[in-house]
Length: 197
Image 1: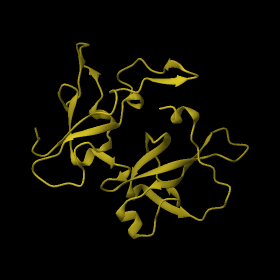
Image 2 (image 1 turned 90 degrees about the vertical axis):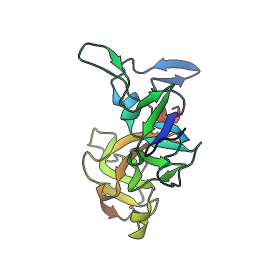
Image 3 (image 1 turned 90 degrees about the horizontal axis):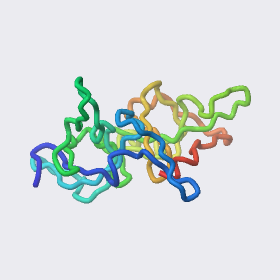
Image 4 (image 1 turned 180 degrees about the horizontal axis):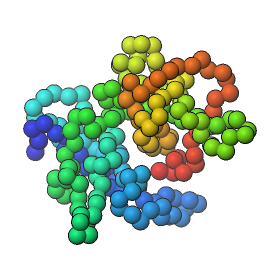
């Protein structure tokens, strides 16, 4: 079974990541189907498009757009699947909705690790728009930006993902605005709840 232009994927575990484990007990974090933060973004490729060749193969783990698995309520209050739903927990996914496969960035996407705010007079826990490049891509590497680079990204360009127990921001290459030299006091911000996901 192959789609002509789309991948067919299924959620890695469940459609939603609504709970976490704390000290061996399950804690429900969300009961609302419409909240995008709790929609699973991790998937498994079931089939690849028939119209073109790709490096992404059946069985690969991919990180995808949150709206693929999201459910919603119509005007009459009926619960509906997203427009990408196919059947039996399978979904269509276009090429540009895949951000990472097998821990390699796809197309012009990259992943940045946020930094802790170290200024004592600032209430925020995270330093706005600063991060460390965790997963790069060929266009960034062509200009010398490799994993470990300290970067500044544009406002509202980041989308939160949990990848291998780390909270990361996904963004496009052109959302990386500046690079900085490391000062040596940068500390990655990885909350404990991210490790349990």
